[in-house]
Image (tube, helix red, strand yellow):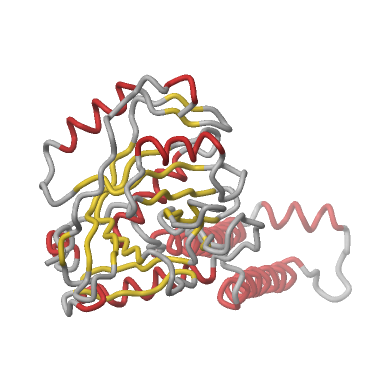
Length: 346
């Protein structure tokens, strides 16, 4: 959003009392994993695994322009009075104006957010906003800070910046420091159902292995995962392919030698007889048995070549069919059926 759109007003932002809730890392229904290095002084942020996948999918859908939206969840306190934020879902900005270096919410954007929010549970409140910085790094510009100050100014409101080109992300939180009232956190936490613990571990491992070494502003810029889009399988250049090639060459060479030997036996002149090559070839062409033998040889060689090519084609297609990757929106499974348990932290 730009300063020219300051006529969008929501009234004074007031911090409502936070409800006491059990944190996901204290609830046995969930499994939690740290991303980055969350510090003790950071606002604790718990992000649902599927919500993060949706954020990544949106960020990667168009790297030419800045994209954005809002994050839904709740702002709570634990039994010791420590605040924490749960991000359980997202809403993408549909009617926005953006370029490669700017993103602007419009009146139509907020109207659409209001309409979509009405169809969701009351437990899902807007807890922050997100937008992308394609190939610009993870930071908040002056206009980004304007949005935070005027529309997301509650103490527990957060902002997320994603750079899908450099592969970085970072959360920003409000502080009480006069010099830097909003700063990047050291990290955040991913959580999901305990029945999807292996999936969570695999996803966090992909974040760790996806480090690109890009220079991002702020210590909390975690590596960005591109796994929702399956990678193309690498060409199979292993021993099996080379073994198949040598086998085909061996069969063809053996058939060639066999046909040469048979032809030499049939066409070789008797000792002391004429050795005129033209006459020998003419005699061979007038023999019906020779044509039958040649036809059988050609048929055998052709069959071998066709079989080899069919096997080679199957070996090329099979790896692509076995490629699974990470689905952006996996279908209903016994694991994903537990998604309903994640939208309300009790």
